[in-house]
Each structure stands twice: as structure tokens, then as C-alpha cells.
Length: 109
Image (tube, helix red, strand yellow):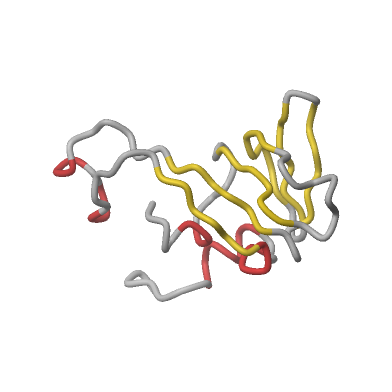
């Protein structure tokens, strides 16, 4: 997974934080994505599971690039240290299965 392809991937299991939101109470909410719907991310925080709207929210996802050598990574991903990626929630608004199938170009379709 690369920062450019993140919106096409499964988000469950990724660490996320809210960077900007029209609701100031949501800014700074951080945890691990446990599930998602068309319009929300369910994030497990220290205070329990929070349901965050995707639309009009900016998220920061932390990508764990791992410790595998670059030659063993599939799909041509290059090996970098952990990386934070800002994503506008509008790019994520879709049923998860449809979002992973259709957004962006793919050599498989």
C-alpha cells in the first residue's frame, strides 16, 4: 500500500486520527479503524469505539511500512519508514467494497 493508493485499500486495522472536522469535538480523536460504512469510520479509541463521519473530515492515517526488505514487498511498494498520510474524507465516501474496486486506475481492470 502506498500513500497514493490508500483510498482504494481496506482501512480496517490502520491507525487514524482526525486532523480537521466541522465538529471541533472530533479533532484529535485517534485510534485504530475497526470497521467502516458508506459514510463513517468506526475507530477504537481509549474511550471506546467512536463513529466518525467521513464527509467533511480530514483524516491522518499512519502506514506501517514494515521491516521487510524492499525486494520482498509485493506490488512494487518501496520500503520507507512509517508514514503519515492526510486523506480528505470525501475521497472515502462509498461502500467499502465499491471504493476498493473502482477508484483510481488499475492494471487488473
